[in-house]
Image 1 (tube, rainbow, N blue to C red):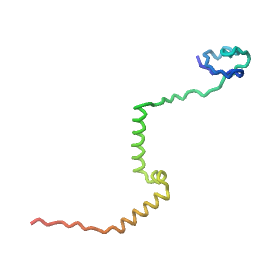
Image 2: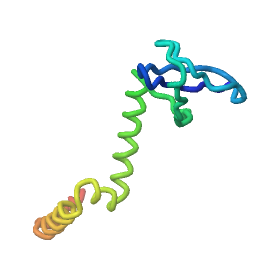
Image 3: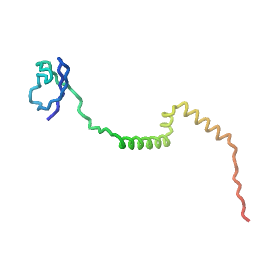
Image 4: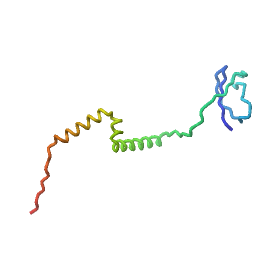
Length: 113
């Protein structure tokens, strides 16, 4: 049977009641005894979401952070969205200029005798 929420307009007492949809709606407040001032509240059904707590929550947050960092490394657009497009673009320009200015070091191979 469904659980219905009710409120008394007189004393503002809220309570839950279990009854069939065929049964009449209660009209008497169990707190103050006033008749005719009771309304049934309409609430959204539960979506079945389970709240994580403690170690499970910490583990989930760590796993999400690792996945997020991996996604950011793989996708330049996501990185630009996180950092900010202008800052990302400026950093890329600086990186390209630094690459051009670096002296090219030739690796010498020693011939063995």
